[in-house]
Each structure stands twice: as C-alpha cells, then as structure tokens.
Image (cartoon, rainbow, N blue to C red; front, side):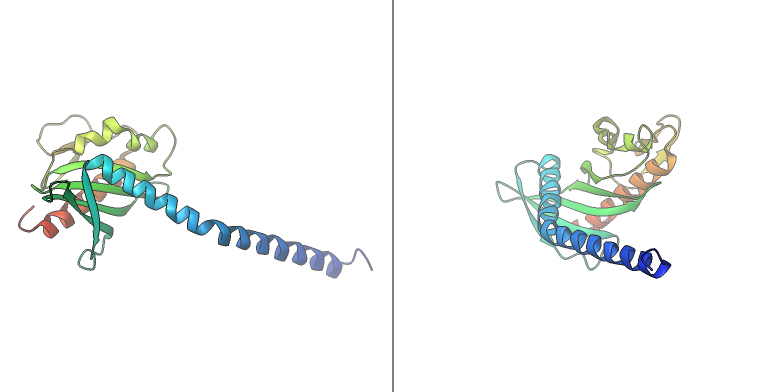
Length: 186
C-alpha cells in the first residue's frame, strides 16, 4: 500500500503545499524591500535625467498610458519639467522607461529601469549612447532603419526593430503626456 498512486500523489501534494508556503513567506518578507529598491531606481534615474531638482508625484488620471508622472522643480524653485514613467511592450516583455521632459517640452533624457530583451540585440536599447539620441527632440519622433535624415529621426537598433519601436513609442507617449501636462502644443 505504501507505493500506491494515492500515496504518491498525497506525498507530492504535501511537498507542493510546503514549497508554496515557503515561497509565499519569502515573498511576504521581501516585497517591501523589492518595492523600495524599485522606487530608488526610479528616483536615481530621474535625478540623472534632470539633475538638481526635486520630484513630486502628480495625478496621471488623464494619461492612461502613463504609470507615474513627477513634476520636477529646480533647486531655485523654478519648473524644470516632468519625468514620466511608463511601460512599452517590447519583443520579450514590457520595457519600463523614465522619460524626462524639460519645461520647454524637449526630451531631457531617457532611462530604462526594466528590460528583458534578447541579449546582444534588444538589450542594446539600454545603451546610453543609443538612448542619448532622444535628448533634445520634441514633437513627433520618427524611427528610421538606415540613416537619420530628419531632425526628429531616431536610428533603430539593427536586428532589434521591435525593441527599437517599443522604446520609441514609449518615449513618444511620454513626450505627448508631458507636453500636455506642461500646457500647449507638443
């Protein structure tokens, strides 16, 4: 009777329940730490994009694509722009971006806080040199594959068009929301 299917299934069920309980307990113990680290990552990205500023969360109800938006105020008390956090659907998973937009509605910078794209291809989207091409742009962004010919062109990563498109669309959504929040046209 010891090796009957019912006995084996019962043992497996008990093991599964025990492992699930341990995993649930570990998740309970670490969820606050994980959330704190994620928020620190966001704060560091914003401080890198718009230095010498303080950031205050603002209501994003009017911007469904936006996860969070922060008003940036310079140390002198002047409006420095906004930082927008959002997710964009990449090739492998969602890509989480922080896009800083200056008060004049130009892109101050872009940082990726979470990316799980293909190593050596889509992961190149997190390269500071590639992200820097967004800086100073405003209006409608145009993703190009071969060479830049226009002022708002963004050169795609070779072999990672889906990732390049996801990041560019995310930056455009953030820029549009920021321009609306800051008032007036893009």
